[in-house]
Length: 453
Image 1: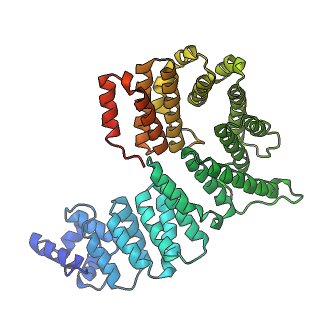
Image 2 (image 1 turned 30 degrees about the vertical axis):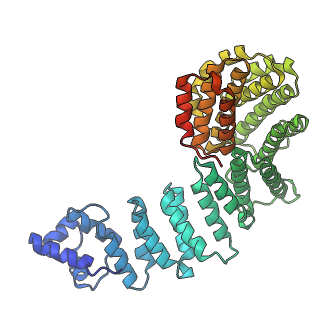
């Protein structure tokens, strides 16, 4: 609805109420008196900066009269030079409903889609995700029948923005976005595939992880050969966010992880060898050298790990010695050591005692890996707690086992990890008869918050 009140009438009323002349208000607002006079007469439209100066001079809160300003913009032919700064100011002041109102009005005309998209990209890069998401959604809706890269990028950004603690929502976001990956620029596809693979990894959808990792590796290899290995080397029109070789070796890392989860440790060892030997890498930068060092370290650690999971318990001391100085890898390694101990029934109390301080402090550092997302970090932490709980329960250390089980249940509830929640519930019910009243009460409080599918 268009307001009957206008900014001009509000300003005119203010001047009469305060007894200020136009010249006096011009001095207060730092707006030329002639400009003010033409604004009040309706001869000149109000610019965004002028409105903010008026509002400040009138002693009103930032953002006052913005609704009136939007209506005045709509009453005239659309003017991007006025609307663009208005959108930025609304984003700064978190006036999301106004952004939605303006953008919906503008997207009736497809000619504004490119300008709105560029604005959303700028807001996204500034970290103003809520404002950017509104614009991306409107642009995507207006172009839903177009087979455009811009439409695909809108969906990619919305996918990125929507990711959070709720794994059910993350799954829906990944499923919705996946169909748009092939419409992206070939370079952007690499990051999109990596991000999707990470989400499906945190969801433990290993078939999807394998499919996406294979596709990412294949596409990155083609681009790598195009850039470095042809007789006439050609520059890519667009460079990826990370060194190109990283997407190739990350596909190997993901696929080794899939084999690990499936219990195919011989194949996992083969993939580990592929991200161990990196003499073929052409890039030469400080970042490249750091990545190579990181992957070689992972290859050594994972080779120990896969051998351990094949039942070669004799390598355990060497494995523990190797990970001791690799802080980021201690918790994932302990998870697999516990898994092996639970499977092959050997004692690792001395190892848990050795890393007790690291285990206790993990809550402060989880989710901060440059390679893995928050969701993957939380999933790994949950798995560690469940393996630790199983280890203690198998050794009839019931209180320690149940406490860790409930800690795992807490994290699983936080990220809506239904399979982990179900596993916790089943384990607890199996050992409920040995739980103290205090532990049972904590369990009942936690489970009252959960509705398992």
